[in-house]
Amino acid sequence: MKNKKNILVFFFIVISFIGFSQQDDNITNDKDSIYVYVNQMPEFPGGVKGMMEYINNNINYPYEAQQEGIGGKIYIQFEVKKDGSIGKTKILKSVHPLLDEEALRVVKSLPKFIPGMKEGIPVNVWQSIPIQFKIDPQNIKNETLPVFNFHNIELNKFIESRFHYPEEINDPDVFGEEIVKFHISEDGEVGEVEILKSIHPLIDKETIRLFKSLPKFIPAKRNGISVKSNLTIPLYIGEPIFNSKKSEPDFLDIKKSFGKYIKENTKYPEEALYAGITGKVELIFEITKIGEVGKIHIYSSPHLILAEEAKRVIYSLPKFKHEYLKKRSINTWNKASFSFMNDGIKIEQAKYPEGEPELYALLSEKIEENLKTKKDSGSLVAMFKINVKGDVVETKIIKGINSRIDSVVINTVNSLSGFIPGKVNSEIADTWYSIVFNFSDKTFIYVRQMPEFPGGKLALRKYVAENVEYPALARNNGVQGTIFLRFEVKSTGYIGKVEIQKGVHLLLDNAAIKVVKSLPKFKPGMQNGIPCNVWYSIPVTFKLN
Image (cartoon, rainbow, N blue to C red):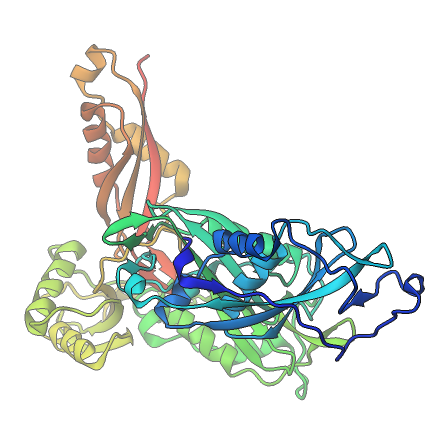
């Protein structure tokens, strides 16, 4: 959003011989010479007044700079080329990256000048101007910035989690800071995206793609009315991590294969074993250029407790031999897989007589009553041991929120009894039970491990087709069509909210909602090994024969 009254622009010609090579005697010696002073200096169409008007009409005072009270005078030097266009630009005196980049942008956009002349021949000439950004406190008071409003995730974290470093860039030196400017409509939609400071064309392309995919903002407001705006933010692209070319990384000081080390050092958590939790944990981990473990990303995991064990083993790894690219050591992504199988031990999990939904509802009610205050946001994963009498005898928090909530959950779960005991190899025995409590209404659109219907997508379509009821009134009146809806798969795997995204008719819409609400339990979605609420979309078609 333009804020012309807040910017004062001053111009002057700087005559300085410091740092420039003058070749006054013979202009033909170097056609690329840039002169500091010539007899006929470059002239902007309309003169200094015309240039002032152009800059005032085209410059934008970044909102975030205004809100933070950032202002001042920037000195810019720019080349007016022999054809009158703008050439090189540089900051002589900086104020702040946000203001510097905006000042450079508008200078680079200046229309053609009447070029400078030396002995009747057009030449390249340096010119310098100051641009002052001056804050008007009254305007700031009546304006608000656009706000990123996506499930309480900060904008920088949202971007960081979704930025994909282009694999085509095969250069370990391509990283650093990009400056991005993007426009936001009165409705909060992201529009045009500009790269004010570029690192690499492919990174620019990925940045533009990512910013254009941003969810809606709460729009900026002026005097309480939603208005168009723009934001300019620095985006730091970290040192790249390349996919390893090795099937297994090599240790630096020990003569043992990576696979053997993983096998020898992985322990099957007792809680998982006797809860009947089996399966594979798939992950990638970073080996830094100094041979140490860096980031870890879990791609799939049957349960958080197994993901935590896999991460523990990865973080315990000795130093590695690092890989090279263009004679430089680099950071690499490496794959690892952990298999947790119970070696023929048959586990029958303990059961709550009224069923898991009722157990979850009972626990949630008791926890809310014991907390007595508003619950914090987040999710909590608890595991508890049920003895042969059906009583809870031990509770462990695998992922907690804070000590107060964790303690309330432990005390509440420990008070439970009346379970149907579990069995180990057909004999009644102590077993473990896992449950997730969500203390947040957050529902993700996409997670690394999306919810899965038993039997997969084909089984889901078959269930809907076999169980949906075509209302007789709609059939008799020739009402047909495809309904698009989304439904919430809760962290427990059960169906939560259902929303029609594109309806056909109230009768058909209600029939589609009914069949979706009847869906059996899903395998819940997982984010970093933690079960979470996730939106799932499907079409439901009603077609007359």
